[in-house]
Image (cartoon, rainbow, N blue to C red; front, side, top):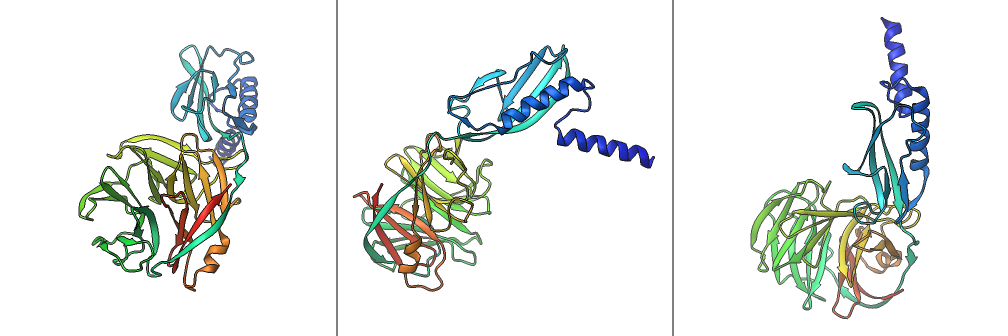
Length: 352
């Protein structure tokens, strides 16, 4: 009995590591399929490239069914940038002899952008006071006012409005629930405020009356950042993914932030301006740190540019200050930046 389990275990281990289906006894087919999968996994794809699942060297195989991200595609398909865009994609391939499925493989491939992310520069053109009590999670500018959402629990999750340059609010709403607030945005006369791991989105009118408590869409792992693009809401979750929804949180699509060599993960507070998404990068992840903001094409996910704002934290005066985590845009196109518990807001002019 012990020998039987050892043999079965070894067989399972080998089959799993080599992507070999134990139900197919055709060793030649298994080898050929492994070679097909390995070539696809190891290749670096771009938009417009083709991926083929050849079947000519497979004995007895009469049909192959290919699914990418759970959607069936031809065995010879093109990465079109729409149905299949930038980022990681899961593939399931099933091999049939007649109506019998004899083998199947699950694997991934990655699509990269055509261009590297450019290093964008800036010039500090102004500073304003910022209340260092505010643990900044959401941030936008409108008609001379700052709208800010704060985080932390125990009553510190708030929605705040104040004049740029002031440290006291003209309007404040404190959420009574014990939740951890995240990003905020405005769409069609309503303000949306995310929560982190509480699976809730709060909706307010412009007088800060809470009009709804909505369920976090299932596509979003955690609530991090939110912004408005036309009639759509874009939500970041701390990964390289940004999900898009309508105003009723009906799912529309997802993009992944990539340049020509790597993903850009830990996307946090986000803001849309002039056709592009600006995203704080929360943690160091190989390409950026807490002081970086990346600039993303919302249609494709391609990372167009990257800022390093490391000097700003040192220019504010609160020793308890944490990460850069506030992006807003004035009407003149200048960017307003602050962070968690910072005592200043910086106005910068973008210089590409």
